[in-house]
Image (cartoon, helix red, strand yellow):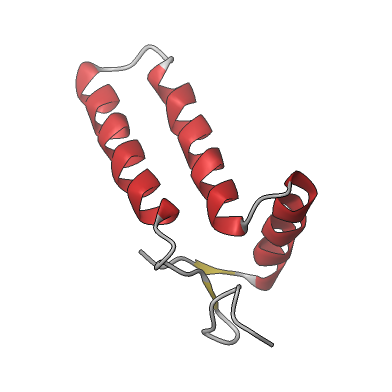
Length: 83
């Protein structure tokens, strides 16, 4: 999965990841997991919980995959590209 981010969002993610000693992909995985875990604690329809659990599982695997890169809208290059 590739995610295209605006420059401002990418800058905030890079800064936050650096302050936590994480790479951007790991930060996104942690944030998505925390968000979706929060959803599962809300009173929801069982189908919604199953859907949220499925999304959490699928996104976690994709975002944790080091072969996946995040590209910017401006340059189409991975955020961790040299240079």
